[in-house]
Image (cartoon, rainbow over all chains, first blue to last red; front, side):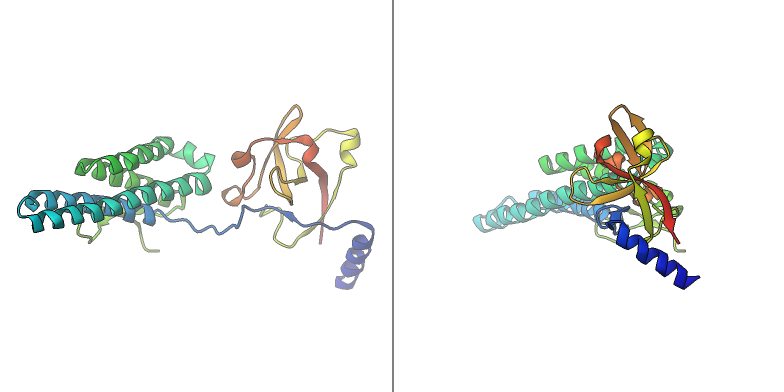
Length: 173
Length: 85
């Protein structure tokens, strides 16, 4: 049977041109995780907090003012970067992982993604801690949807980061 | 295209069926990628005049018309007639 199959295949290869046709996505890696977006949102909150603390004790001698300016510059740069990382990571999930049947099962998905884009930009424009909190909460809700689409139960748990905020993680299994 | 096709499967595709018939929903076709120089094998999910929408059977891991939109019908290279076993 195997020999016959090989002979037929060989004959067909002679008379028909052979080409490769692809059925999958660009790679496809299939590896997606909301964790990076969550980390980035936590970092935004942490930077907001550090900037707030700087402001409180930053008025004083020229040396203290130099340290204040230096601190503001560093924290702001990291905050800008991580707000963008957060947006980028959510865009990957939205564009490459989530499919129409996910959006159908979780109708608020598109709104949540759009909200992350808005809050991510606002996070750059302000040092308002509430904006960072809203960003993290929205990303956590997307993370919950992500794990549910994989039939994994998500849980909200303490992050054990200095932000002392929650993290959504998949249950072990 | 799993579970219909698996990586490495060989199929016979021909344009002949479309000489006397039109592409229709459910047809498995080999087509030219709309933006890249390679062939795809997908299933027709919608026929809209001179364009077709295509989708992979393994929807979670497929890049298709849900990403790049409808494809001109001229991109079809052939209909998959059978898989070599």
